[in-house]
Image (tube, rainbow, N blue to C red; front, side, top):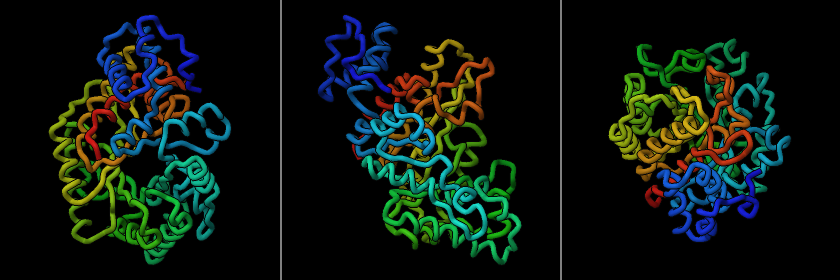
Length: 386
């Protein structure tokens, strides 16, 4: 549980900053931390005070942005301190996998929404927005889908999307309708070769979005994809390919409302060109789409081994990214894939070679704010007003 400010042992040199009751006080104190203007031990205590006085949800909301996280029912039920942290910090709750196709329709025509239903009710009861998804994703397909005849697959997908979105009609702020459809560089195709492409056909994205829009016209419908952030050939190829896809579906009046950029960042100095990224986001906006940073976290690929140095590298990566992305007014929200390193997929997917626990998120495994929290709070505060 995040300590209340009255429980924090604040160093003498920071006591005058302890009462960050106004926005000016908060920003001044935060800027001091981010700029490294206080001793490290003092900064550590100050960031806890700041995190107790302000929340990422509220700092983002002051600029018209939504901040949220993805998590699971079992964590919220089993860990009351973590549950309180999620409720305190987040304005949007997103399931990690609870609404993936293989969980929702484990056998043909048999739907099971209990995990998604629990999360939707949790969000409603705590005055949070609920973001549904992911509905159509090749890695979330049930095994039985691949055995369908092509003549049947389209109708089955149509029924799945319709049934899923209709079940939550009027309760979901947004839906990730289609996830990770773009092919990688060298594939020689626009879309990945998946059972969806082979069985439903190259217009499966269009079909899925039309079905979702008919099932809930009020929800924000998102196309979501990855590897779009860095100034490397793969990401450049995917940005161009994605713009081509978005132009096509815009011309075809496919009801996509927003682009989700996953934003799985990496330390280690990958080339980053803010001007190129800003231009890409501007072109997406010009097509009429909103943009959401949909799965933000940071993998550690740099040489740092000390926790303070690692945290600084992670915070710097978040800062250089969000400070560019949040200049674009079409960006309406930021979602981290998790909230605390107590629960993160990167512990298994991208562990450190030295065995140290990963620290990719705004809170560490003890539920205390990290330098990533500072970086996100400062980026939200610097963002232009929506």
